[in-house]
Image (cartoon, rainbow, N blue to C red; front, side, top):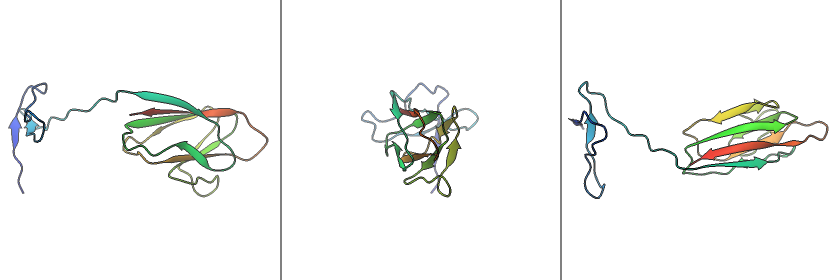
Length: 131
């Protein structure tokens, strides 16, 4: 199937139907496709107290546009993109105290975390979700 683009040198000009059911592919004078990013209207910051048992830092959210984590504890936190993080074999990133992590923009699934074992620690993981 071949697709043809309609030249539109003004990206602000919409070329869709009145009800938005269809749209043309818009390209500039050089043939580059014009893409409009949908801005994220809200962000929410929550504080999660991690424990030495895997727990949810951020629940699944299909509307998520992005997320960031900041380890505000006095110990390492092991973060997993997915469920059931472990400190030895099943984690995505190890955040030392004061470290931050930007979640890949395309990931909207659950994010779990586990606090490194050791003496009783204090602090929280600050979780910012943009949706």
